[in-house]
Length: 188
View 1 (cartoon, rainbow, N blue to C red):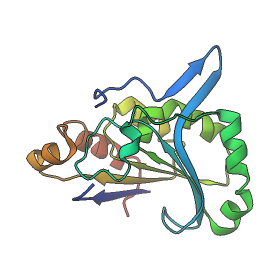
View 2 (tube, rainbow, N blue to C red):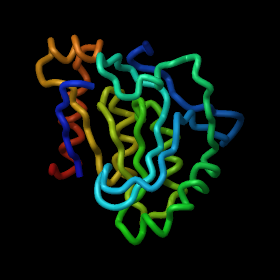
View 3 (cartoon, one colour):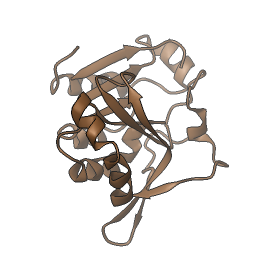
C-alpha cells in the first residue's frame, strides 16, 4: 500500500552515499537516532516499533526531526542481529495487532541497504512500513519494493517553487519516484 501525505509544515548532498557502516565482510551497522517501541495506531494499523535513522538530504524549514542533521549528537550504531533482537521483544504485539516495524528518520532510504538486510532477518509475519519523502535515488527505493508492505510518503508540496523554498532542494526526483512506486502498489 502506498499512502501519500502532502504536508505544509515540516546539509547533506542529494545523493548521500549511505547512513550505515560496512565493517569488513558482511558486517553492517545502522546509524539509528532512536527506537520507539509500542506505538499504537500512529504508523498504520496495530502496534509498531519505529526505527528512526540519522541523515536526510532535505533541509525542511519546520523539520520535526532536526536532530537527524546534528553532527554533534552522539551516534548509536546497531548491528543487524542486535536490531532484530530488539524488535523481537515486540513480536507478540506485532502478531496480535497486525503491526510491525516502521522505518523513519531523517530519511530512511539513505539506509536502504541496511533496511533490506533487516527485513530479510525479521519475522515475515511482521508488517514492514516506511515513512519517507522519496527524495532518494530510485535504486534505493526499488531495493525495498519487495520488503516494505506500506509506504507513508510525505510530499512537501506539489508546486516546485514552494517545495524548493520549504525543503531546501528541488523536487526533480520526488514525483518521478512517486510515479514509479505507484505502479507497484495500490493507493489508499
